Length: 303
Image (cartoon, rainbow, N blue to C red; front, side, top):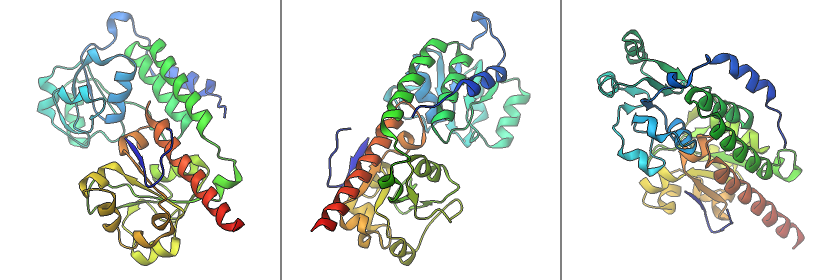
């Protein structure tokens, strides 16, 4: 879900040949009968991609971050991706457990490996090329290469039509992103986070690029940075009882130009950070707000 405060918008070519050649060496060649038939998916972004490729019949369980599509909610749960239940995984008798680098804890992963469970981590993603690489990797892993090509092409075409990282107006836009999962947990995305990578991908400026990791920020620091556009999570808005509650929960946010001018974008965290089929929709909403704030600034300058 994507929501834009006070404004409603209707929701480059890359070369991936080298990435795809490299990824082909990372996986063994499987015969059709060797592809997994009972998969536990660990990580909402992995689960969403498996559904997008039409591989949901292989799923026998998921972790608790796998909330999209809604059908995934009916599958047995094996705990949160960073706190897997060894017994929960084993009870499902999977051929393969597929996750990300976040899969853990290490003791649980090590125990599952020692018990013969086939554990696979898909490549990490922080931009369009790596997102396409992951789609193809997963497709080859599951024997769904044709479907993966369709998903990757759709994603690539959409992103190509949305991104304008060299646009001078985009490059002048100053953004702040709060990666919050609930009320009272407003953590800014620093320059070395996935949120920071997304702002860089857009071509905009992260007003907190000097911050390492994610952390809270004082009202004084937020007002001094005074971003043009602020990105909030749908999860934080829901937990705060609405957008006004989410804004008031972050000290100083209501006094920034972003809040004063209604230039706040609310996006689902899995949709934004998952780099999956719904990712372009979230990016398009942010780009729409960037364009809107540029237009507002131009109108003010012409008055």
